[in-house]
Image (cartoon, rainbow, N blue to C red; front, top):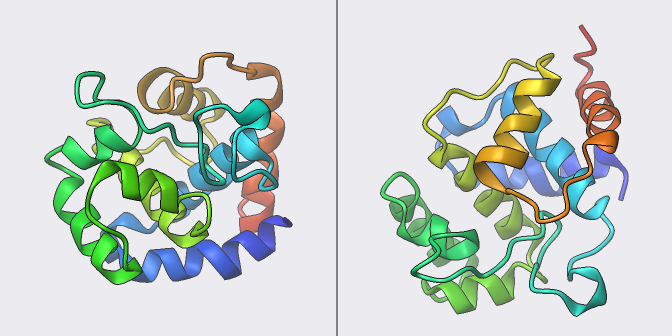
Length: 167
């Protein structure tokens, strides 16, 4: 899926479901870069039938791990927003139902991805901070098992280009 289509068809509607303060150019750069890194906006189920679902490739996690969907479900900064979001998207407010819905509901997936970023205690990196964006994604939030840092800068640049912020 082209990045401009992701913006128009997924991120714009997702932004309308979350508080306005969660929408920013920096947030959109992160969401576009992470989506490219995780699925290239092509795959809604992890290749090889792995545990990740949705364009942002969320795992279910567990209550004990506090990772993936469970992490957003349990976190005090995101739980209330997630509950409202589930009502709006007609998804049961429980981790298994949310995780399953991510595969077929791109708007829900974008919102859950934004909520995960919202749980990070640090401010979003500036739009030109490629290293800070990688740290947020790879070290503090998604924590991929097999990170691919060699593709990150290109995806980050493409995200900024799609938003018209190549400064």
